[in-house]
Image (cartoon, rainbow, N blue to C red; front, side, top):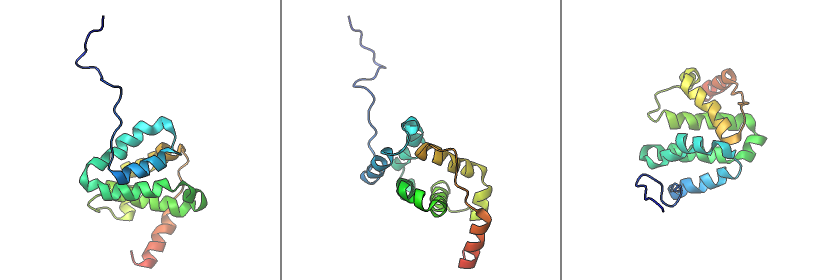
Length: 141
């Protein structure tokens, strides 16, 4: 005898539907990203696609993250670009300068976690912060 459970799941877990642009990037990322961190990627990144103000910075971040071959070839440049896109994603109102972003503990922690969740590595690329700040000053940023 089967008893109906009103709190039970009906046809198994439901696959989350993302907007098309996000879904394409998610599909590309999930081909190389470690499967054990899928839930973290959903919670901390993909699900933000449902909130309008996060869509543009999320797409930019996922686009950079999805170019895993570029990370292998140009590690420093790509790591810096990932950091900038992550900053844009977490600092929507652009209140933090780059120097302040380096000091923001939560942002730096998210940067480390991003490499674990998307690339499966705890070895985070050094951003060479001092040299980067000098370069940006010369460029007028």
